[in-house]
Image 1 (cartoon, rainbow, N blue to C red):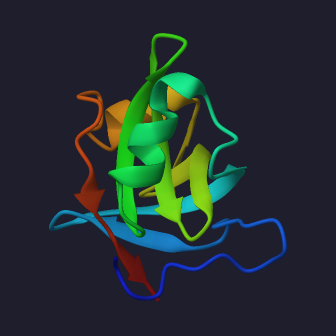
Image 2: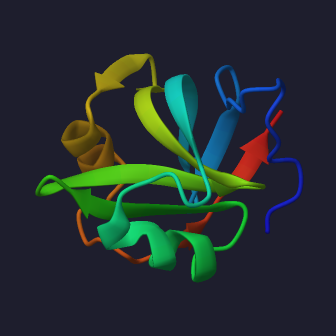
Length: 114
């Protein structure tokens, strides 16, 4: 788990928070959706609930599209819209491509940026 990744409300969200991936890729979450443990698709449920750790970023195939998720306490948060270097990226495939997550089920650590 990477310290400082926390959701801020009763319905968990990471909107407004920025994260660093690798050496120099920083992204800011602009829209997301929370899925509690056991309430996401059956195909990926066991993997997400038991093999991905809090604070890890991963993509999984959902309806044949690489879908980017961040594991948080109690579930996962799907990234719906991010900003990278001033560019707004929307949609699961586009976000996964920008974050180099097209190879699914390969979790990576991220760090919160203040």
